[in-house]
Structure formats: structure tokens, C-alpha cells
Length: 216
Image (cartoon, rainbow, N blue to C red; front, side, top):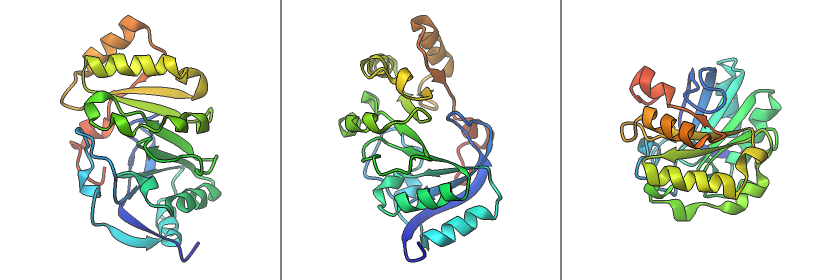
């Protein structure tokens, strides 16, 4: 493990802003790099730069916070092959580890102890063609699937995929999230209620608390 390296954009302690553990104190490990360019991306600063660290040193840095929850995110963390080893080493420490991934790369090798939070990219993202639907077979009952919704067309597409793949029966949560500043959360809530969808609507808590500043 000590020889394996990853490029890290930032490691920070904050409240989880979304997913099933929203509001819980969490250490975030943000890896550098992403092969996608979603139109609504809010972490473009993580596309480049960062610091090369050994997996062992990342694990040691995380331990300083004595966390219960750890989220590995990006960019797209799975774009770095040593991310899989990092996830396993964190899971070994007894943390509840989650992975935020675009759904465009193979999730099969992810340690089964890790909660995968996998996006399916809607039309407005500009990256819908990158969805790797084969990944759905690797989702476990504790995993989550997220749809980021910018408009009515995105919503209708997401509702169709929800039913097509019977996602509520496969994972613990299906998350619908409005694009911040583009779709009113109230409007998305009304659509979900009108269609009686079995999903959890979420807003990105960190954007309301810290105005989307890096490190939060």
C-alpha cells in the first residue's frame, strides 16, 4: 500500500451536503481529474493540479479527523486506478466509506463495503452518452443512484430510467437533485409529488451553508 500513489485535490472535514448521509460530519477526499465535462459541473477546479500522495499518507491524514464517515469524490475518482486500493484501505479502518462516481467508468472492482453513489447523466449534462449502464448490475442494496435534473426533459428522462431499470428495488436510495441556480427545488419537488415517484429529493446543503466554496 505504501508505494501506491494518488493525486489529491483536497482533503477536508465538513457536513455531507447530499446523499443518504446528508448533514453528517464527513471527511472528504477529493481526487484530481475527470474525463467528463458536464455542463453544470461545480468542481472544475479539481480537473487539474493537486498533490501526489501515497495511499498510506491519505489514510493517515483522514485518521486525524477521527471520522465516522468518509467520502471519496472528484472530479471522477475512478479515473485514477489506485482509487480502488484507497477505498479498500479506508474501509479496512472501519469508516463508513462512500464513493461519488459519474457512472461512466467500471464500478465492478469497488470494495463491496463501500457505498457507491452513482450518477446517471441526464440529457442537459451533455454527457448522457457516457452512461455505463452495465454498472447497474454491480450495484448493491446499500448503494445509491443520483439524477441531477436541470429541466422538465431531464426529469422525464430520469423517471423513465427509474422504471426501466427498476432502480428503487436495486438500491437503498434513488436521489433527484436540482441543478443549483438553474431549476427551482420547489418545482422539482412538485414534479416528484405529482408523479408519486419513489425517490428522495435532495438539495446540496453545502451550497446553502458555504456558497459552494472549495473545502466545504
